[in-house]
Image (cartoon, rainbow, N blue to C red; front, side, top):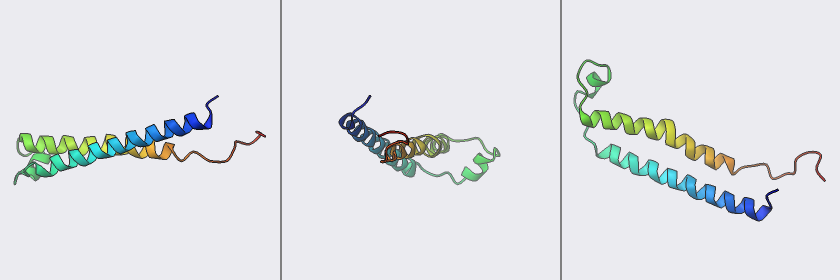
Length: 91
């Protein structure tokens, strides 16, 4: 069985990882904002124009941050909110 100090150490490490993921999200958003937006982006997104590299990268970064990294950070942080009370049936 894991003692409280081991669990506290693991929780601190999980928090550190969550903060690292959040920092990565910020960094990728910064890269995203520096990429130029094509005046044809709307047409590219609906397939009426061929996609340029900048638009492709912007889309990939948006998906990675929103669909993958933000949920990881959120799940890690929520894992730290384990109920403080003892489970029923334990004395």
